[in-house]
Length: 292
Image (cartoon, rainbow, N blue to C red; front, top):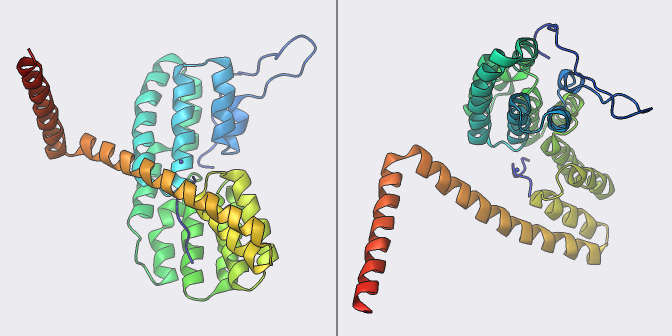
């Protein structure tokens, strides 16, 4: 009762931070600070505020990394999440030299070391069939704000696979309570409703998913199924066709990303790429010489 993991892509005590709210203009309210959004774990808005105040700055880059990491965790793209974490750790060191107070707050809210362990927990629990064992193995992920919702979602999926719908629903609901943007948890609530025969409730959940992730092909497909079960055939066909188009696009994008990752991490792949480039250059030069 799991779902495709792709759209289509509070820890510690408060630390004294620098005031960063600035007037938006004469007679207007002050712009919210990035800190206020970060404390709510709304990293997308936090980085948006930073981009308005200091586009391209070190703080903006750090918050972009946290926001990207949050999105990758929601999509279960752990390679991307680890890449974002590495970028964040580098940027935090730079930020510490420039704005010590804000760097300290960001470090306290994100706790990169614990986050690394939490990501490792999420990555290594595939195939676990005992909820109690899974809960224990996900302990690090459940205690970190950036991974808690995904850990709860994973527990919900296991309960759903075991036919324990009430427990599954509870975990999905708790995941959404912690992170309202976790679209896969809401998708799973829709799946539970569909399996229980409540196509109208499932439709409502799938539409809510698509407000969060408009390019999520799995939600378009399941919405089509829910619509068909209610006799809304015309709408159903449109949703399923859109899901098919998005699926093709996503598959192509993931293939490109996978090749890029292999090129970056595998020396043999890099050597092969260099050899292919050299061969193509040699062929081009040979054709050029023969055409004279």
